[in-house]
Image (cartoon, rainbow, N blue to C red; front, side, top):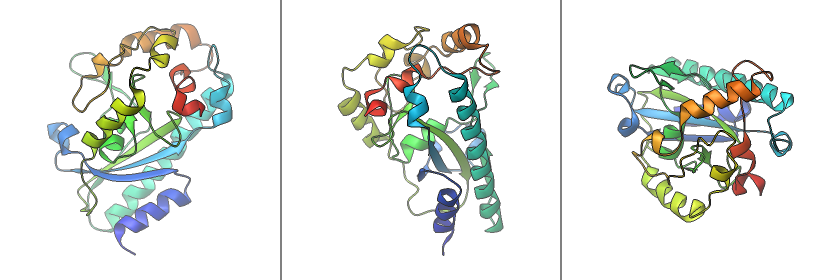
Length: 232
């Protein structure tokens, strides 16, 4: 079994529902260019719990969200171990982590959504989240950056941009439903600034204020629950 097949098998055996490999050099910062390929794994969130997010997130959804993040971190760590055994470098990006950059904004070290769209798993909706045809927005993602070579490590983001135009179209349900008024209504395309899609500060501040009693590092989920591709 080659390395790619080993990683695929490990990911699915541990609970992943999605797996893709892509070339992400266009979406990386300069200090990560030595790790040009990205392995993206996704775990489908509970449809039942997502459907329960009507006016506000629930305590059970919050716990589920954290548990799935922990599972993803276990999967990506296991993938890193296997890649290193094969003689290559690898770096697992935490499922849910943000760091303060020089401009004072909180961003991930590497956006999981970049790996996902480059890998062809879906497109970015007006909710600023990955949307997949199978699970809608009800997925959590993890990423492993590596210098291990893979034949199918290509950039598929241009074709995903066409899906965004086709499937999101003029839909603005998520924008209209955002309680923080954080969604800007922009239609995603490769290279677009996050600020054209989401006011991250408004989202974070609203969650802390409105849902802080639910748990540390509050979550919302409204834009996931109302997405037509999640509902179907």
